[in-house]
Amino acid sequence: MVGTARHIFDMSLAYAKERKQFDVPIGSFQAIQHKLADMSLALERATAAVHYAAMTVDGHDPERGRACHVAKAAAGQAARRILKDGIQIHGGIGYTWEHDLHPYLRRSSADASLSGP
Image (cartoon, rainbow, N blue to C red; front, side, top):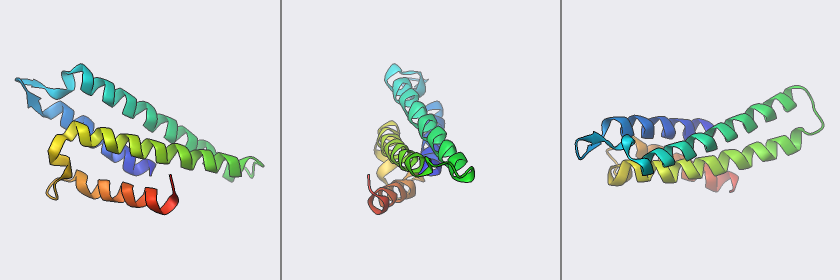
């Protein structure tokens, strides 16, 4: 889920840099900047949780079960947040079959339904 979230974030950031509205990139608008900042924080939080869980599993730490649950919850929350904001940044094009974001929308939704919220 973290990998999917990272890819959606990267796609949204690139789109915000190239898409122009009123002759300026949409990434220059404060609302888009705030969404991207929130997405980045959620992604970094989830990445850190997953790395910590991997370290506890590798080190046979007694807290590894709890760390894995925290990592799964953080990754799921980040994936949902980044997907929602990524779709909003892309606008209507993100929902179309022709855009590359659509398969990630399906993957993220399937991951959430398979592994729980």
